[in-house]
Every structure is written in C-alpha cells, then in structure tokens.
Length: 338
Image (cartoon, rainbow, N blue to C red; front, side, top):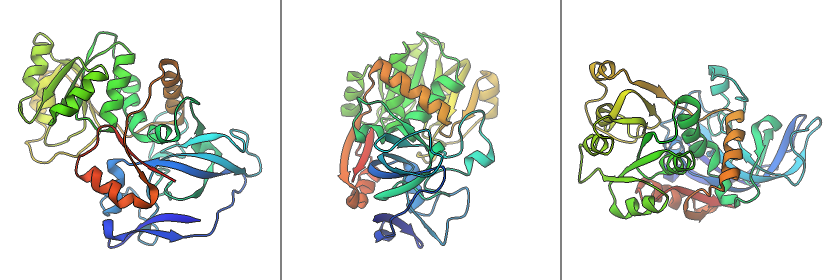
C-alpha cells in the first residue's frame, strides 16, 4: 500500500508518498480501506513540526485524523462493525465517553497515533463509527474533528436555548459546521469573514447577521447592535490572540466563549478584568468523545445536514491541498480522495 509521510526537517517539501506493507488487523481491530480524508489546521501544524502532545515516532508522522473508509477485514472478537461497513475514523481512538483525560488525549490520530493518510489502515474497533448513509464519502470525512468540535462547543459545553445568539468567526470548517448546527437548533447566528463573497455564501446557509471584520475590525460593536446592547450568548473563538479581545467585548454577561483555534496573530490577548466584569465563561475545546460523535451523527441524519465540501483533491496531491488551506481559499472543508 501507499501512505503519506511527513518527516523531519518538516515542511511541505518533506511530505512524501511512501510504500509500506499492507497491514493486518489483530484481535479487536479492523482493517479499513480509506476513501477520503479531510484537512484541519492541526494537520498543517503537524507537517510543519509545530504540533504534538507526545513525541513523534522516529521524527515522522502519518497525518490526518479525519477519514472515511470501508471495513475490509476484521480481527478476532470484533463486534462493533463488519466487513463492508462504511465508517469514519474517530479523532480520539480511546475517548469513548465521559470527561477528557490525559490518557484519552494521547490517543489522537496523526499524533501520536499514525493517522488516516494511507490506502489501508488498522484501527481499534472502538476507534471507528458507522455513519449516515445519505452522506458522501467526502462529506463523512469532514465529521471527526471540525464537525464534532463545533457540536461539542455548542451542545455539550454551552447551555444554549432556541433564540439565543451565537457568533461564529470565519468561514472555515468548524465555523461553518457551527452555523449549520446553530440553525438546526433554532439559534440566531452572526458570522464574520474578511470576504463579502464568503459572507454571502454563509447567508445562504442561514446566517442572520454578517460582519466583514476587515472593514469593521471592532466587530464587537455590530454584535452588540444586533443584540440590542446585550451581547452574544455564545462565541466560537477560532482566532486566538488576534481576536479574543473582541470576543470579550462582544459576549453578554454570563455568556460562553469556546476557545477552539489560534490561527490569528497579534492583539493584546486576554484582559482578566473584562472576563471578570462580564462573568463570562471561557472554555478550551478539543474535539470530543465517541458518544458525542454518534449523538452528532443522529442529529445530522435527522436534520439532513450536508457538510460543506469546498475543494477536493486527489490524495496524491496533498501538497496542493495544503497550499490552498494556507492561502485561506476555502469555505468549509478541503478533502482528499483516494
């Protein structure tokens, strides 16, 4: 089989296609022929040597946590799936239920566990899940990280009610899933972007308020205006240091800020006095458990939510896909197909 491999000294020039032996499933394991994987910002950091809770193996990684494939063989004792089932890989192979722990966090695909960027992959039967039939392979591949992160932030960690206002930063995968989930739940959504074209696309998905943050850097003001001065009930914070100041100004007293990404640069960071002054809750989010994933899939099926796949590349052209991601060209998700 063939596999993608990123290695020291890292960078796109060191993302290569290699030949590897076909794996075989052991007891409790399944062999999956991959059909699609989707890109996350985490993958970009990984291939550039900027990511990792645990040391990589011999200075190299097999990237991608998010994949869709078909079970080709099963090991002894496997009961969760059977040959022929279409499954998604789970971001955390060992986080089945309950709260996160360090032990569970160390079971993430891509790092430290070899990821889904290969033609054939062996996973624990506990680390895959069957998926809605109506979704394409490309759509399924977007669910394990971006979709589940948005789902957990909105419905596992925050206490939102129909009619509440949520702010979604940007039009990347997590924020677009957040928009789709918010509208399905009866929430009012305000979305930000530097592109009027992308804002118009977000409007077609149900966004109630649009803010071009390049034209309006102090975007907390239109958030306040849209909420009659009260502020947003929930903010999906994906920028980090460059945007957190505006989030603190935009959130209502007692509101919730979900810290998901750190893609922005600059800014003055967190002012504890502001956080205390509005009694807001700020919580870091790193994906979720299998129980959360399967609850999300039930909701996706009920509401027939189709993930937004913006660009598709052959998996052998992973470099071009990463260049598209780095250029901020996408709306929603970028996918590689096998």
